[in-house]
Length: 104
Image 1 (cartoon, one colour):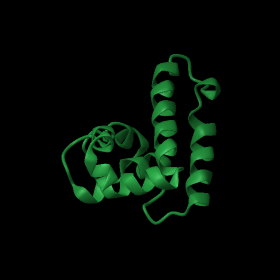
Image 2: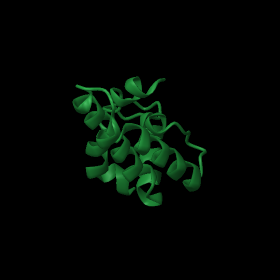
Image 3: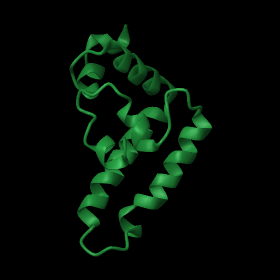
């Protein structure tokens, strides 16, 4: 899955979209997740985009990268995300997180 596909697939997709956004996998350690985040952050930061007219797309990609790192970079939130993925419940992660399922 390329970055654009990952950016579009996180509503109820349980295939590891946040991991795909950062270019790592569920077995990646914190250091690898952090390194991938920094690489993508430099690559897709809206202030660094060179192509005219790409600011909107860059902003969307940047927001998705930040969101993925906010979840995967925090051990507690990452554990919740991994439980959501394993649950295969067809609700978006944010909605699942607000429910009682995340705290079980």
